[in-house]
Length: 448
Image (cartoon, rainbow, N blue to C red; front, side, top):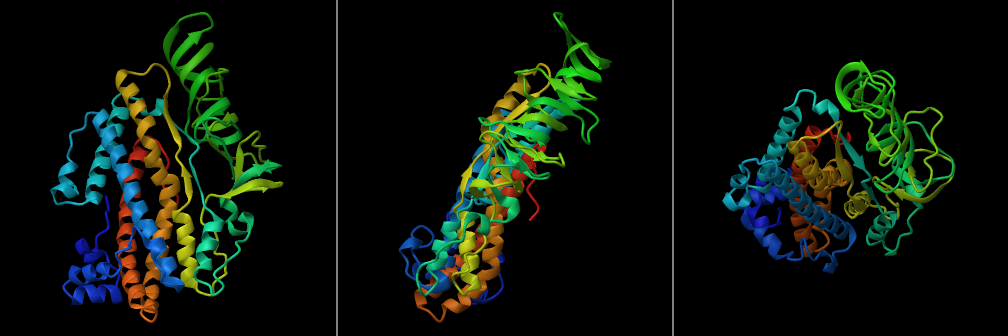
């Protein structure tokens, strides 16, 4: 965990400028320690400070990222350790952790690297097994509050108040989600979940009901009627199952199909091609005319109609109530760092009968992948972007704080150090999580 203590600072992580200059010219951590003593409220009690101006907003956002870096890294480390334990991986990571003079970053990297390797080895142990299994991911999102950004920005302004714009106005179009009265556009997303089915004509991240046709891959996972050639188990109507390879199957194909597969009603399956039907996760729409998401499913990224109960799943734009760009950047980061996040649900679906080792893998992924995918796909990218923003603006806040008060300067310096170290830690956590996700066939981090 990244329990923040400046007395254990790592100068190599500090950005160039006045903070690094003070630390290096005064024997490193000794001056930093004295700064902490002048800002004992960081990071756990920054809401009790009254620094005023940009410093208050920046110190709050820095405390947010320090606390989130700690909790996210802890959750991912626990998840990777659980996967390692369930897959009988020898512990080589504890020796790299803080209890043995190392760092949590090194411990997370090692534990998740071992988990990634174990998952890959298990999926590849049986020839073709990796192609016959698919990771179904349902739900998982973060909602960012425009009100949180505006409330923060109001603390920087002379009036002390700030009215936020509507969610629709403050959110990037591609991040806006809600109930859509019309069609959800091509390249937008119908958002389903484990309990909500979304209409789908496109790429389904979870389980599909209806039909599945091959996309870039030559075959698709099939649990139903294969309109082409089946590889796997073929069960004739009223008959027994027999193993086939690239053969016509008059009955139920359980394996791979090189053409359209019509899933057996009541038996949804992961579709790694184009799903035509419903999806109990996110469906990226490929139909040029769009899709009515239907029911309680939401549309994200393009609604040809009215959006009700809108939410923002990405960074909100600054409310522009303060003239300071540094305040706006800090408050935008604060809103992202305090977003309400819901983890996804995960299921590893394998065609045909699964061995005991595959059953163990499926169970451990279902239990432990959600915090890892949260770091990869939703909260992690939001936090990483906020860290980049705070690292960019922090030096200017420190420079300006010197003209406000000694406490503002001390807290801004400590916050700058904390935010920089936390940002580096978050990047390690996201990359470690991405390696595990990739090994299980899961998503990669979005491009920043």
